[in-house]
Image (tube, rainbow, N blue to C red; front, side):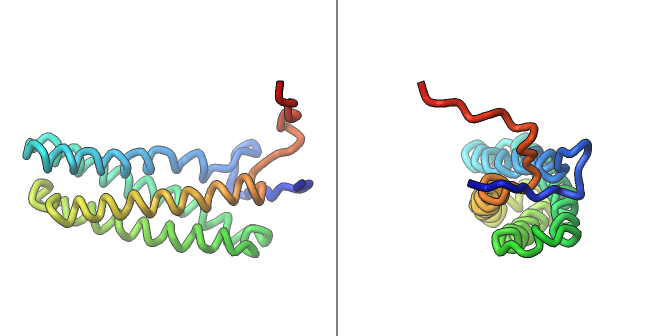
Length: 159
């Protein structure tokens, strides 16, 4: 059983900022898969326009959240020593590269970029999100980054 946690330096009141920020960009990029599929099925411009906004929100939000996570990786020696943290960071950079390309392809003509490349990039981004999230979960649950054991409730016995 783990006795020590690794504190995040990028935190507010002891709560790490990176996990707070990552939910909206992830939701936007997962939603982008849905809008791309909806456009492919209906050819309705609404879905192309919604996808453009989701791609932008997901990309910009991801860069902000990723920058905060990168600062923790650079500043905190215990995090820097973890192979899982470096794998998480490398996958996140790959994900942000895919998301950025996907958004940039859509800026001038949202509807023409969706099929086939926009949809492919959205699906590939979804896979990258899954892998990156898995590693992020390992950093929290296996390495206790940002976990405060003093504040955590005592485990309950199964009934």
